[in-house]
Image (tube, rainbow, N blue to C red; front, top):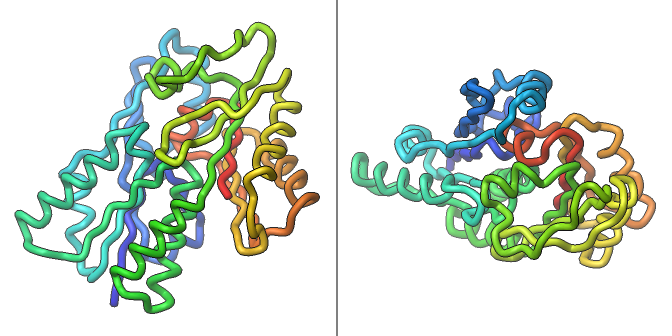
Length: 279
């Protein structure tokens, strides 16, 4: 059976995924300092970070419309999947679900399933790859859905950012206890809860110590690393990402390691210097 996987643009696609013909990006949009940016192949991370640095206000994002998702679902593929940002952090999941309903009202029944990643960035990448892997193995639509949902249950997301201001000002840190003042150069180590909200796992003084602390947190949770892909995305700090990969490689053997630059929405929330790890 033919298949298609729609990933909202918070998820980074590898070159291999882009060339396969099975993946499509549903772009979110960003407004910063009077500029409207579409998070697609035209996104310029360097220019975006410059605009953010010069802006007195935090950038704001908007998710793809239900009509955009309906359009993506209207294709020749027998099985269609969508992978979205955590429903706790964005309206993208609900928009995709509404797009599915609109499609069915307009065109009739079709095998469409929307995965709530309960993660972001490269976490979405891994979920989309898992769905493709299931399809390539010849699994049925329902088997793929069940396998990928189980995969999401076992996935863990961690991150260390230079600043949490964009997350805080956009209401993505609701429910968290007060973060220590940045004037002390304290960098919180953050992670995703099973529900897809954000929690603080620890903290350290300075970014290097915070990355080491993040690695420690990852190792505490890590099970069966040889069966897992270690995925790291970074915003304009490739060496930091490599350093984290090396620290983890020294303590565990992984099935695969992948490192990607953040796309637009991930760059907006990770901010310059942020590192995200999903395993």
